[in-house]
Image (cartoon, rainbow, N blue to C red; front, side, top):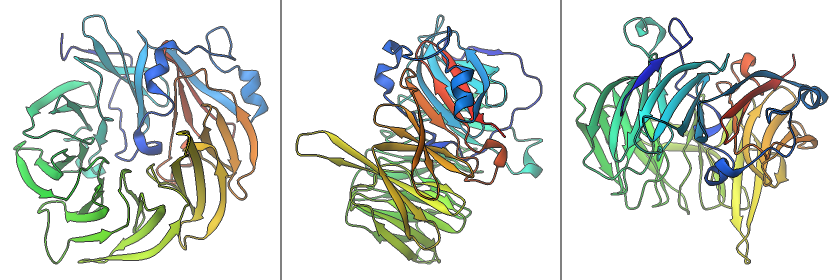
Amino acid sequence: MQGNRWILGLSGMILTLSIGCSGGTPQGKPDAVTSRKMTRGDSSGAIPESRLEEIGFRTLWKTSTGGPIVQAWCVGNNLYVVRTGTDDPFVLEKLDGESGLTVWRYGLREKLDYPPKVYSYPSELRAVNPDELYIIQEDDLVGIDDRYGQKEFGVTLGFPVSTAAVPDQDHVYIGSWNQRMYAIHKKTRLEQWSYITDDSITAAPAVGSANVYFGSEDHLVYSLTRGGGYVPSRSWTLKTSGRITAEPLIYGDRIFVGSGDYKLYCLEDVGAEAFTRWSFPCGAPVVRRPFAFRDWVFAVTQETRPDGSLRWNVNSLGAVRGDSRWEAAGVTEVLAADAIHCYGLDVDGNIQALRLDSGQVNWTLEANGFGLILGQDARLGADKAWWGRMFLVGGDGLVQAIRPRR
């Protein structure tokens, strides 16, 4: 039945971070996940340890869920998968990122249209405020206790939802097909404010210390206050020349935004306006959330050729000045990074290790037998223990977590 939960295997509180893995979205080709088989692997379908050793990696853990996996996201330091169920059509299952153990399961009536999002309260408030998970189901906002998978509330929203629900301490921010961004107050579960743009909002917002940032297909970047929405002395818009369809990235005191005008923008919020630190012409529309690691920022572009095929490319830039470091063709996503490499997903669904300093491909791991490949942004490079960690998700329920050998 809807909302059935089971608590398995872990004691105590599992804490997750509000910033997550590479975009927090599924990689690869989700629609084909249940029909794919491993082309190379051991008897379980996993990448063999001998092959991982060749490239300086090892398996952190392997597990198999109770049914075929149709969706998966890495959020914070944990993995959330949607698989087929028995009592329910689908099940949302949380896997602990360190061990692979199932933390909880939650029954769903359908697959999720948007990635789940987690909010962790500041350390001084966590004792009385457990981590919260938010999902959207058929334009209903559902709040779940992320420790146990227990439903806290469900509310029907009065608008058609077009983005994931992104929380902060007091609100949940949601974009709509009616061209508005909404702030829903957590306690009252009522609309705190909304703001209308001139076109659809199809990318989730990013929440900063005081403001929320988002783009619209009207070519504008918006900065609104978290509690009050548009406030003249503290809000602004910045015009680009293309549609914005990718989530912004907040990195330090900068906001990185990719646009359909072929540029990656580095902005600084200086109050009533945005200061453009730099913009870089990437050669094609920037279609992914930027990925940042230490002094690097990566922009993935997609161009439709005359024959209808897609051309993918990644630009590696200096995060401070926007200087070009290198670019590599055929990379559809930057998954993770460590001190030597950034790890990209190529057009065939394989993992490439590209040197941070030159973009040279040092090795390719044949992983296209997995339907989904997820990366970990290691809190934008701040958490060394999570550098280079990736999750390989098979449609048959197999999940293999890998990491570089130390």
